[in-house]
Every structure is written in structure tokens, then in C-alpha cells.
Image (tube, rainbow, N blue to C red; front, side, top):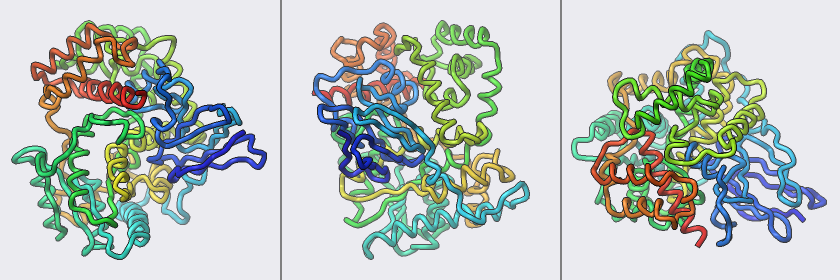
Length: 515
């Protein structure tokens, strides 16, 4: 028999009257995943993958591949055999044995608000007004639902996304707002800019750095903190700033984070480059893929060799799938067997067509980025840590109020191909040009230092010693080579950094969850 119970956040789970089916509606950008598996008396499900695992579970090869290539589980695949993950932006029907019967579009979570300006003649002022009004309504709704003494704590990098949220908080809750910023090192240029923006807006800012608060290492007890494995090395500085913010938070404070702005308003022009690469002859991409491996470009990226990774990612992949991929190290550092790559690629294509059956490729890429990269990877760096303290975090750019705009009329507005043009225009109305239009660097730290730490290297070494759940799916000699590079402080290409952190996180998570 089918049954559903528990707290699934914004994921709606309903059982049919005859208890023969379960219908699951997961919003497109829901930061709550939902995992399901068959059990003796029906179906068990949970937002926490570890909660439904058994010590004798086997890992799934295709699920491991998807986790390492895309940075997180790709629905319906998970790293564990017999466990599936529900698609975002879809209504999924399971039978009483937990088998997927049907996946259809969740049209409600993608509906655009009425009376929005459309067409190619909408001014940037009008665009910014619409977006800011939706963000303000979302944030005010969250604050109104909190106790009267609740403050708004904004995770503040000083980039365009968090700065626009700061502008809105100055309007709706100026006396209840605290900006929290993480400084990476002495003289950090991002901190200088963040302080300048806070001063311009007249908002208080708390700047924290490593050592200001006692923070447990990210890789300690990962399955107890994170509901499923993902790979993003900026989890390290994110954990530090979140825990520092928690140390300054009251029991009722509401956290806000600017994740999702890139996916919602920054990707409409990106699909074109991947479509151009997709049109290249397959032999050319295959040749480039082989050259990438022979040149050992995963160790360093001198000059034009770095462009080989683009061609390698595009090999046997749709433009959307290639754009979502986190690295191109399959068949180099980890396995790609039995058509796994093609199978997952087809599933991503099918998923995008279900979510937006009439959407153009640029909007489909934005939708998939929001659902997979933003909701399934980026939000997981902060959400579990905050919610374990009983507090809440909201991602206004990923709310239905904003997504209906972003994936609807905004994709056709003038300047839509220019990343976040309307957001930056809105900022320019409140901040000096050098702050509103400045180029921000990514929220990362010096990973060569992190990778050279004994506690990280000790975990990395165990990947190749036969005890790892991933041992049969990794290339041992190249792993050992990568370990030597990290031990010697080599600054690795970004894609290799993603892999190095992601594979250790995945291995540690599986060890913790399956023991």
C-alpha cells in the first residue's frame, strides 16, 4: 500500500483515495529534495537521503557518475541502488511499489503574475521595478510571518544579487536588517566593496573571518549535517559565514540569501555557445577530448588547452546537459560505463521538455540551472546548517513570485541576453556606478591551502586504498597523482577543484550514512 507522511517542506505529497498511488509535486526551484524507495509494506520517502538508507545498500554506478559530473543527484538517479529522487518542476506519480508511473509539468509553480509588461520595448526601469516589487513582496511575506522581534540577516557578499536584496531590505525593514559578510583574507577586495555598499545604504554589517568563530570542519559528520551529497568547494567558506552569522542571530531571525539570481536572470545568452559547439562534427570533439586527456589538462590549463574541456564536455551531450556539467573528468578520474553519460543526458533533456514543453533552449537551460545547480547544489551549502538550529532561510530569487517573471516575460525583455542587466540597472539607481557595475569574483578561497591540509589529504588517500564505497569507480593511479599535486600545494584548475572536493565529500557522506 502507498502512504505518505512527514515534513516535506514545500514539496506536496498526496496519497490517492485507494492508497494505490502517491502524487508528489515538487516546485521547480525547491531547495528540498525528496528521495523514495520501496520497502516491505509500500513506499518510504524522506528529504534526507541518509534517513532511508540501510547498511547493506549498494552504490549505484550511474548515480555516482551523475553526482560527480553534475555535482549532485540528477533525478531520478541517486548514489544508492533502489533509491530515486523526484524531479523539480514536476508532478510525479508513483505506484504502490514506488515505481514512477508518470511525470508531468507542475504548471502552478511556473505561472507568471498577471499584468506584467511584455515585449521588446520594456524599459530597464520598468524591468527593475517589476523584479524588485516581486522580491520585496516575497521578503516582506517572510518577515511578516516571523515574530515581531525577528531581524533579517542577509548573507552579504557585496555582489549584485545580495546588494539588490540589501537595497530592498533598506526599504522594507531598515531597522531590522543585519548584513553578514565573510572576509577571506587580509585586504580582501570583496570586503572593501561590501563595506562601501553597506555604508552607502546605511545598513549595519558584520564582517567575519576564519578564526572568529569556532567552526567544525565541513567534512566532519557530513551525513549528519547534509541531507544528501553534493560537490561544491565553496561549501567551506559558506559554512564559516553561516555559522558566524548564527552566532550573532536571535532565535527568531530570518536568513536571506541571493542564490538563484544567476539562474533566473543571468543565463539567457549562455546556451548559444553550447549550441555552436554541439554543431561541430563528433570526430572533432572526440579528438579534442583525447587531446585533453593526453595533455593532462586536468592538472593545469596552459593557454589554449583550457578550451579543450569545452569540447570534451560537449561530447555525446546535449547543450543543456553540457552547460550543467561541473567538470569533464569522466573516463579520466572517475568511470563512465555502460552508456551512463548518454542515459543521464537523455533524462535531463526529457526533464527540461516536461518542465517547459514550449520553451526555447535558453529558458530551458535557466529552468534546469535553477532546479539542479541552484536548488540542489548551491542552497545545500547553507540551508541544512541554518535549519538545524530551528531557524529558516529564504532564497527570494528562487521564489515562485520571481520565477514566474524570470522564465516568462523577462526572457523576452530587451537586454535579456545581457546577464542580470535589469538587476544591475536597479542597483545603479541606488549605488554609485563603480559599486553597482563592478566585476565580482566568485565566493571561493585558496583551495590549494585547503587541499594541502592533513585532514583533507588523509581522507583523499583513502579513496584509493580499497575501503572506499567508490573504489571500483575511480582511477587509482591518477587519483594518486592528484593527491601528490595537492600535497605539494599545486593550484589546480577550477573543474579539478570541484572534483577533488566533491569526490571526498561523496565518499565521506556514503561512509557516514551507510555505517
